[in-house]
Amino acid sequence: MQNKSHRGIFSRKICTFAQKFAAGTDGQAHTEARLHGRPRACRGWPEATAAQPDWTMDATGREKLMQFARFCIAGTLAAGVHYAVYYAMQLLLPGGFWLTVDYTVGYIVSLVCNFFLTTYFTFRSRPSAGKAAGFGFSHVVNYTLHIALFNLFMAIGMHRLVSPVLVLMVAVPTNFLILRFVYRKKS
Image (cartoon, rainbow, N blue to C red):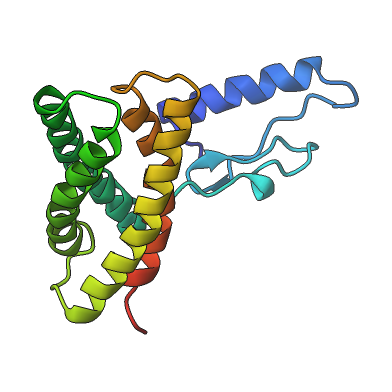
């Protein structure tokens, strides 16, 4: 029985067209067999569908993707808090010496916000001493990376309000990898 759907008609036309212009074919009609709702190769042609990727995502993949999306939302909020505190401190205490201090105060305030956002929202778990210790360790590494990059960008002449944004572009993916290890579920 022939498939009368729009995709069936369209795939028959493409297959017929391809057969007419391809070398070495005899113009036979294509098969109506389908794999995953996509047309199979025309008769006499190699099976193209065997190598086609399956674009469906299992539950684990969807959860990881959603977890990363929640991490990005929580991280954006924490970065906003960090940058707002840093910017406010720039207005209150202008000067070159205070830049690292301003950046550190902003980081500490955002650290507290980020811990609760990451625990409750991103990884959907409850705070514990072990998670706080792991989170603290990841942020010691993250803070070291932040300060090193911040001072590097300042040393090469980046503007004091642009440097924190560049730091976040490098540090956020690194921090996500560390935190996935801290919050992974025990099997």
